[in-house]
Amino acid sequence: MKKPIKHFAVTTLTATALGLLLAGPVMAATPATQPTMLAASETVNNAEDAVSDTWITSKVKSTFLADSNLSGIDIKVETNKGVVALSGVVASSAERDLAVAKAGEIKGVKAVAAEALKTAQ
Image: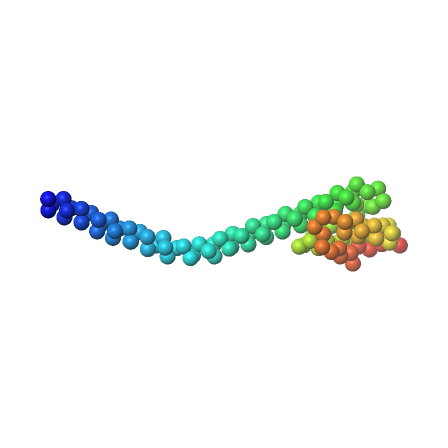
């Protein structure tokens, strides 16, 4: 009888010691995963911003190209954090105003900067 109890006690102590040794690094690593998760979340947000800016640029450019009143090929479109920057040369101030208005109508556009969009007149 003594041998099984002694064997059980040794086995239990060994298992407990190994469990504590293995759990220590895991428990220590848990707080370190928080910054990693935050960094991953920030990276995803940055990627979403980039996709949104790319989408806005594409949508503005395609809107310009589809409108027969705009010379869409002559207007350069860039987007940064929802702010659309228009540049190039258009035929008239009416065309410039139309380009600004059309760009401002696109979903996700926060502002339109058209200082670099010049008129030929």
